[in-house]
Length: 59
Image (cartoon, rainbow, N blue to C red):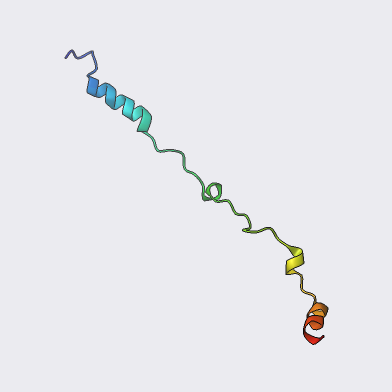
């Protein structure tokens, strides 16, 4: 091998370092997590009417 000509192993190493030489950019936790309700809020189901309770149980 001549000193001026790179060896095939050196070229392969240079390609690996160019591709994998640095770590990927850090991803913040806020960017990885998506929060949304499991079900849509239903105000008709969650509403409590004390008069309706009296009518159902007392009549």
